[in-house]
Image 1 (tube, rainbow, N blue to C red):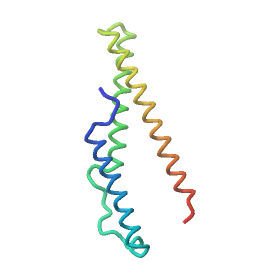
Image 2: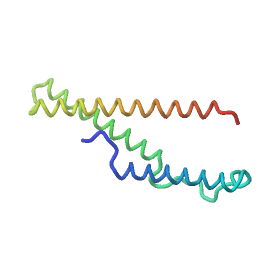
Image 3: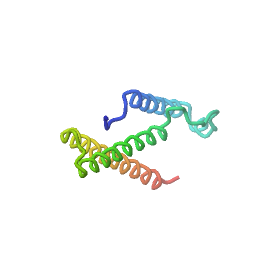
Image 4: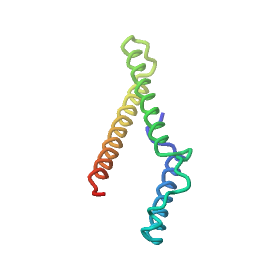
Length: 118
């Protein structure tokens, strides 16, 4: 169980970021009139940012549930491998901390955007 996003998800996120930067650069070169025009397709793509966040939350939740089951087995004396249980607990702890940091950064970014004058 890895606490990191898969390579495909990271590369998709990187491609989305690059396409957004290219779109912003293209709009700045075309002028303000084209920036006000509505876009033809505003539908989210299959590998959208929201889906990545949702998948990451599901993964962290699965790790936390697995760790809770491992702890219950340990408390009942059914644990086979104490070292693996401790490694799984640490992985879930680090995953949860990463999720909280991402949440905090997203919240800060949202608050910064909301403070911008229109």
